Length: 274
Image 1 (cartoon, rainbow, N blue to C red):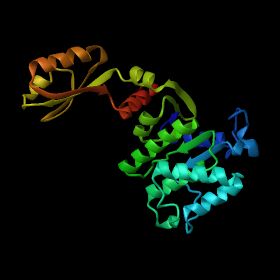
Image 2 (cartoon, rainbow, N blue to C red; image 1 turned 180 degrees about the vertical axis):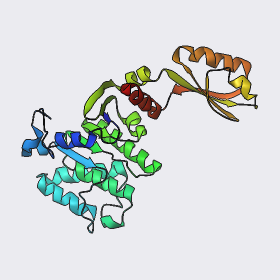
Image 3 (cartoon, rainbow, N blue to C red; image 1 turned 90 degrees about the vertical axis):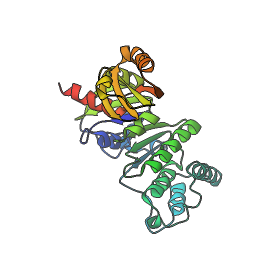
Image 4 (cartoon, helix red, strand yellow; image 1 turned 180 degrees about the horizontal axis):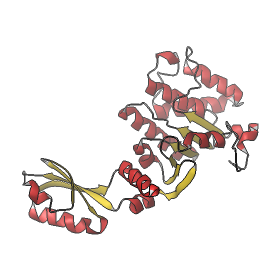
């Protein structure tokens, strides 16, 4: 589930309430039937929280030392511990990293170790606050692929906050949007796109350069740098427009897709302020 909102909306505060780190000033919170701030052992053994800008790893020690500490804290058997570490290390392709002092690892490598440490006890609910913040695009993709595989294998619930909309688009079926602590949207990701993205984007790769004035006859011109031509048109007109382009111009390739999620979320917040 994606948990979206601008800076200061209350995303991290909400995750801290859900994981029992903060006591809510109003209302009640229930997770897996427990009141989080009671901090009951049975509850804590079923959840995990990863904060993108915080860490639980011991800086001067290999990550494996933190894994072993968590093994004792969560009272995990040797068999389960070894099986889980092996599985997570394999999924993250991190075999060569677990015995290197944390201070010698890159940011992306440390995030891999943070995820393993957080998942040693196989939590039913995983709270992730900006897990890909500061990572390069390659490492972001690796982390997303890992989360998809982990979710598929262990069937855990993952609640994710992120300002990188690719994280939300690739990982989340359900989306919750908040602002200043108020719920603005709770529903299917696809419905959000359709409702708040009235336009679709057509990307055309041309065989030969054409006059820009002719291009402007077709919908809302977004970009034209030969050979690439990108325009946005209403959903109801997209098939007709694509057919006309193919009929009138020499086209090497054409692709139709929804607008980027960043544009959709931006439109959503603009509308919510009116």
